[in-house]
Length: 132
Length: 105
Image (tube, rainbow over all chains, first blue to last red):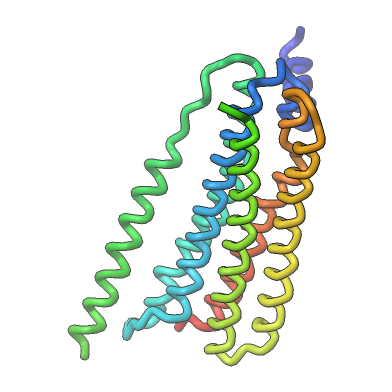
């Protein structure tokens, strides 16, 4: 197969979804993958809710202090929502082809982002208390 | 181990996702209310209520199809129904951005 044909075939495969390749895996693995997808997606929704709550209720004397916390959380939530679906697809494809599950850096990125946002929020709260 | 229990846990996970969207809706309505933005209050309530309803319906539909189907193929997830969730997340994020920008100062 020529390189162009291989790329077109891969794109067609991606459009059709992972259910068209390989063999049907054990239903328990299918369910586990779906629950993992749902858990990632709920994490995304949690970040969005946290961002909305920060925008509404965070007390900060600094101009734009609320948005400094709220916007990254909301954007990260949207990115994570999209990632969850891509990750489900990649896992489904790997399971159907009998390949190892793809690794992802997202847990590390998420942990780091939450730690940074917690630190920023703490600094804003303390700065507000000191200013009073 | 029965896949029936795995299916039940998956169905419950769908329900929790619908509840999470409802919770965001409640938070956004409250935040928009505090910001005295009546249009955003109505839009947040309507959009997130519809999204939560759609996600709950998708989960129920998947559960019903799987309970009545047989064989490993019956467990296969419906890609368009799963796609509903990232779409709901992005719409929720856009609504949250609108509320944040109207309240954040």
